[in-house]
Amino acid sequence: MSARLDNRPIATHLSTEQVGRLRRLLVEEYADRQVRAIELEDPVDLEPDLADVLRARCYEAMGEIDAALARIGEGSYGTCVACGAPIPFERLEVLPAADRCVSCQAGRDRVMR
Ligand SMILES: [Zn+2]
Image (cartoon, rainbow, N blue to C red):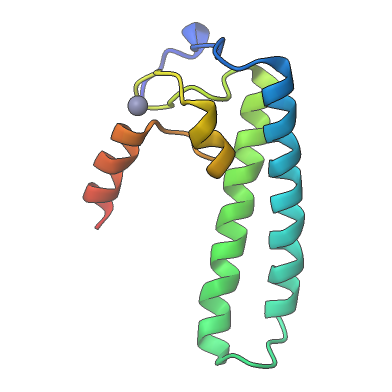
């Protein structure tokens, strides 16, 4: 974790339209996850344990989306939180809540496994 809070990189590679589109994707995904999490509170077709795991994942995703929306608000959205590199629009379009570039995410996934 770096402490360069006063020197935060600002994404300049995304247009206002692109950020607006990604913001809409985030809001839509948040709503989908929220609906799914509520469904999983009373699962009809799943083992309760599995439903708990899936519900926890929904809340995790909602937390990531919240964080992404907060980064849009502060202007740091679209830059890697680990190395500060710009995250390409194409990656964000697939994974709007991504907070790392591909290489930092790959490194992190290796550590977490
Ligand atoms: Zn990075």
